[in-house]
Image 1 (spheres, rainbow, N blue to C red):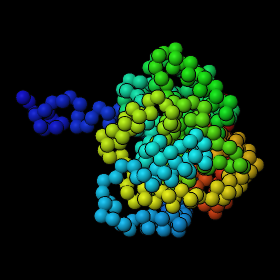
Image 2 (image 1 turned 60 degrees about the vertical axis):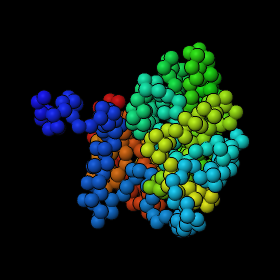
Image 3 (image 1 turned 90 degrees about the vertical axis):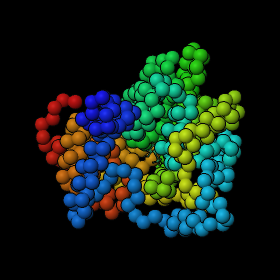
Image 4 (image 1 turned 90 degrees about the horizontal axis):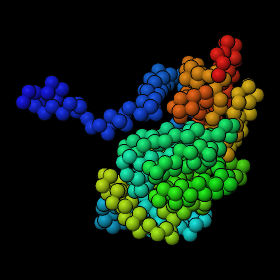
Length: 416
Ligand code: PLP
C-alpha cells in the first residue's frame, strides 16, 4: 500500500487526521463566527489592556467573586471522609438542595431523584438532547438563539431547524414553529428568559406551544420533547414572574446552570430536571445516567457538588444588574438607539443603527468598547451588550456609544 502523504501511516482514509464529527462542528456558522470573534477579542484586549478596554461581550465576572461563594468552595474542599474525592455521580445532598430551590421557582413537586447534576447548562443540554433524540432527528429553535444550540445539535448528529422569532418583541412565532414540525422533529428548544432578547415568554404562549406539540406528537405518533433552557430563570427584573415550559407541557427536560445566578461560569455545575409522573420517567433517567457516563463522566466535580446547599443561598445582586440596565437603556434611548427593556437575563439587545451590525460593532471596537454582533446570533442588524460589566464601565462606555451612533447616522445608509 502506498503511504498516505497526509498521515504517513500507510492508511489512506481520504479524510485527514480528524473525525467527520469534529469537522462538522467546526463548519457550523455559529462556531466559525464565535471562534473568529474570540480571536479578535483576545487580540483587541491584549493590545488595549493598558488603555482600559470596556468588555460587554460574554457573561463573565468583572469583579472579584463574592466572599461567601469562595468560602463555600473552600469549605467543600476539606475532606470529611476517605471517599470525599472518589468518583461521583450526582451527590444526593446537591440534588436535594437543588430540587428544593427549583420548587420555589417552578412549583411542580420536584424531589432529589428528579434531578441529575451536570457540568453546567451545557452538560444538561447535550445530555437532554441525546437522551431523547437519535442522529437524523430534528431540533427546532427560535432565532436569535444562544449561539451554541447548533453546535450541540450537530455534535449529537441532530438536524437544527431554525424559526425566526416575531418582531418586535421577539415572542415565539407559534405558527412558524407549527409549520416547521415534521415526522422527524423530536425536540423544540425553548429559552426563557431569553438570551439575547431578554423576553420572558408569557403563559398564553407556552400554553399554545404545548397544544401544538401535543397535537403534532399525536399526529406523527412520536413524542416531541421540549428542552427548556432556563439558566436565567432567577434573573428577572421589575418583579416579573418567570414561567417554565415544564409547567405547561409535561414532556419537558429542564436544563439549569449555576453559572448565571452566581456569575461563576468557570466553575461548571448545573442540572437536568425531569418532571415526575411521566410514563417514561424511569427509562429516561436511566438514559441520562448512561449518557453521563458514556459521554466521558459528565458530572460536576465533587467539590462543586458539596458546595451546592450553600451556593443555593447565594445570588448576584439582581437589583444592581437592573440599575445598570436602566442606566444604559435610558442613555441609549436618549441617543437614538432602538432598544427594548429586557424582562430578565443580563443582556441588552439593541438594533444596530446601521444595517451592517458587524461594521457597527467594529466601530465600537475601535473606540475600545466590545459588544457582540447580531450575526453571531444569526440575526444581522442587532447587537448584544452584556451587563455583567461594572457600573463604572457602563458610565465610561456611554460617550463611546454616543460617538458611534453619531458617526453612523452621519453616513449615508443603504436601505434595510
Ligand atoms: N443557555 C444559555 C441561553 C446561555 O446563555 C448559556 C451561557 O451563556 C448556557 C446555556 C450555558 O451555560 P453554562 O456555560 O453555565 O453551562
